[in-house]
Amino acid sequence: MDYEFSKSHQAWLQACRVLPGGVNSPVRAFGGVDEKPIVIASGKGSRLFDIDGNEYIDYVGSWGPLILGHADPRILAAIHSAAEKGTTFGAPTQAETALAERILQAIPSIQKIRMVSSGTEAVMTAIRLARAHTGRDYIIKMIGCYHGHSDCLLVAAGSGLAEHSTPSSAGVPRAFSEKTIVVPYNDVPAIEQAFEDHHGRVAGVILEPVAANMGVVLPDAGYLKSIRSLCDYHNTVLIFDEVITGFRIAYGGAQQIYGITPDLTCLGKIIGGGLPAAAVGGKATVMDLLSPLGPVYQAGTLSGNPLAMAAAIATLDILREKGTYQILDENGKHLADGIRDAAQKARIPVTINRIGSILSVFFTDRSIHNFADVQSTNIGLFKRMFSGLIRKGIYIAPSAYEAMFVSLAHTRQDIEKTVEIVYGVLDAIRR
Ligand code: KE4
Image 1 (cartoon, helix red, strand yellow):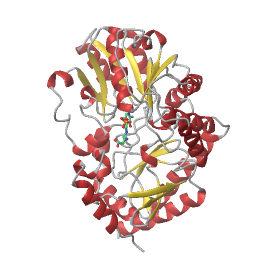
Image 2: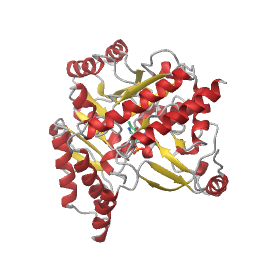
Image 3: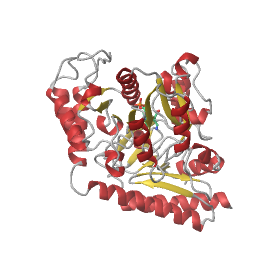
Image 4: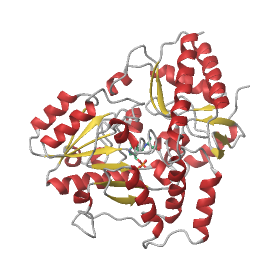
């Protein structure tokens, strides 16, 4: 029986009177699909419930943080006990040190770390550090990668901007964006050319080591290694934006899987345990440039917030347990294989890119290596799949440029049910 959404639509119209687009982050407005947003009442484990009482198996997981699923009792307990002592002090607490020590243990390239409240802030700080450390201005980024909404990175960004297909956002002065060079992902000659064109002036290269904001796109063999050697050769800071991949595809993130050491790493999502927290970390020689030690200013009222620290510590202590990432990888593989079989049975060609518990379904019969490849896929079919799935209780990202996230809370039954519904939806589309 198809779902109906009258309460959600009513609530969304009311929201639209006070919030631009009725949302506090653009992708939630469902602009990437032909549907109106659903308004959420609650979540539990792998399930999400909207205010019309519809239940969903959730593959968005709030865009990555909820690797343990919604309202995990162990995380709630950690938040509750922290909250009893107060919510924020604007002064050092031991929880910040405790989380930092865990992250340094997980990611050896990080010798010092600064907590902030969003991935955008983490990336902003990393870029400022790269420029201060090198005394240079230019930044190289990849088309289709998204690094939050700081001015100089809203140039050919992925995620929401990919949806709106504007090469950069309004309100960003040319002076800000002209120091950002964009090249295609998985294209080493293009980066070599960018370094030649701006010889001795490139402060940093930033990328998602596994891209997940143009859909999931994996680095080609040797790609990350080539970027590392180019950065070494040009004395340029290599920044891995692991806001999605950090603690997601491995406890040590993409840098553990690919064995490439960046100079700076940006983290977010999972390291907030579902609350607002993110971080930038890396070589002490670079990080110690940060105020109050050094000349690079950066600050935040709620940075290192005690509730987020408690949620994050509890989350990482669970993720560190033996076998965790094997389960996540098995869940991801089970879902990807199931969807691939369903599409084959429905005779609709798809390419699925997956690593661990993140994956994307592209409607194409070709492989996907960069943003242009993604743009050549059948986005219309993605939208029809989304519409079919949401009416049958499967909630995936409302955009072809995002990832599906599987959590430790997803059961084999959840995945089998999902695959069955995917087949039904794809079969109906073909017919
Ligand atoms: P936030 O400022 O949204 O916490 O993080 C920005 C960011 C930085 N780097 C990467 C690789 C990211 O994926 C993000 C944020 N991701 C988007 C969607 N994939 C968050 C969802 C949204 O914008 O509402």
